[in-house]
Amino acid sequence: QVQLVESGGGVVQPGGSLRLSCAASGFTFSSYGMHWVRQAPGKGLEWVAFIRYDGSNKYYADSVKGRFTISRDNSKNTLYLQMNSLRAEDTAVYYCAKSPPYGDYGDYWGQGTLVTVSS
Amino acid sequence: AIRMTQSPSSFSASTGDRVTITCRASQGISSYLAWYQQKPGKAPKLLIYAASTLQSGVPSRFSGSGSGTDFTLTISCLQSEDFATYYCQQYYSYPPITFGQGTRLEIK
Image (cartoon, rainbow over all chains, first blue to last red; front, side, top):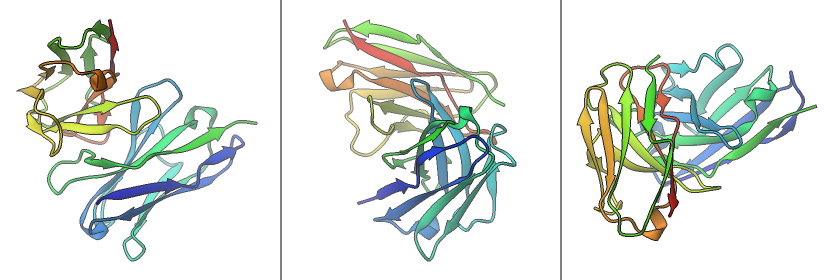
């Protein structure tokens, strides 16, 4: 069955960096686009970034453009989110989500990893 | 960016009720709309995609309709496990992919 497991979250100071990982199993990872979506404490869902199955195209929310980089290693079945210049407003649970073949929504989601930006 | 507005933001209902949640897009999105359910401390779960297609394994009491700018999620007979927060999401035009603000469904 599809399984997505995020890791790499933690506490980081403002201006710091963090790299999140999402380990995928149960499907052919290299065939599907992948998303990062976040949720600040007590708030709604905010889409962060999307990467095509082969890494050829990447898309970002304006709030993270230029600071965050989405990438993937299809040989390791792993999705990444490199987060630089972190701000307090980046504090959230970060979810990775798999896209189906047709339609860029999330059909399977990981359990999330918490990122806290605080001094 | 396409803005997604859900109504109501929250409401109370009883087990067995029929409930409808509305999602409006700021511009036409054809049928590129998904609905999710989220329970506290859990990841979102896909319920419906392409506005009206039920995701595999989702109970048939859930249904979706609409196209263009106006969409609805209907739960025909509320069960105790349905009390949660529901989000709509457009994937017609991006970036950015956008979510509605959520509708919290509580037990009356």
